[in-house]
Amino acid sequence: MGSIWFSKKTFLYFGGALVIILGGLIVVLAPYHYVNFSVIQNDQRTFEVYGEANYYPQFEVSVSLRPSNQTTIYLDMSIVNNMTLEVILVNMTLTEENQIIGPGQAIFYEESLLIDIATGNYTLTVDRVAGATRFDLGLNQASNSRLFIVVGGMLNILGIIMVIGGYCLPGTLFPSDSDTIISWGYEEEKTGEPQQ
Image (cartoon, rainbow, N blue to C red; front, side, top):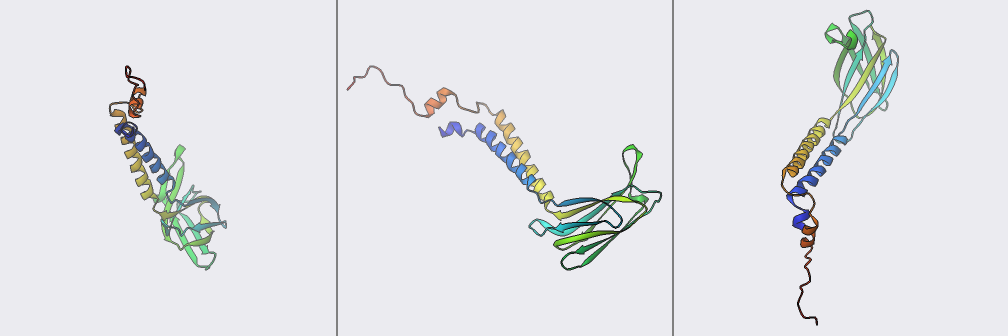
C-alpha cells in the first residue's frame, strides 16, 4: 500500500503544497515594524523600537509632502527616549532635487534618512515645518524582513515546480479500486477445494 499512496506523483503534489504553505508562513512571519503619521508643526507621536531577534537598532525616517509656495522645505524634529530622556535631533532640508511628479501633475517632495536608535519607547515632536503645512512621516525599523521574504519566495517557487512536476508524471494521483484491493492483499477465495 505504501508504494501506491506514497508514489512520486503523490509526493510531488502534496509535498509541493506543503512547501508552498511553509514559504507563505515564512513571509507572513517576517519581522516588519513600520509606523506612519500625518503630522503638522508641534504635533507629538509615540512609537517603540523593538529589541527582539531579527530587528536592528536603526530606523529609516521618510517624509512625503506637498510644498506650499516655496521651493525649499525645512523640517526639524526631536525624538526623546521616554526612559533615558536622550534626545535625537532630525533635521531635513528638501529642495527641488527631492521633487517628484504625482498623479494629475501634482508636485511632491520626498526624502528619507537612516538614524541609529536604541531599543525603547520614544516620543517624536515636530518642532518646525517651513514651506509646508502637513506632511506624511514614516518610520521603518531595520530588520531581516528581506531575508524572510526571499527565503519564503524561493520555497514558493520550489513548491510550484514540485506541483507541476507531479502533474507531468504519468499515472493517477489516487489509486484505483483494483489497485487498492491488490495493495491490501485481498485474494479471491479459491473454488473447487474440499471444505473441512
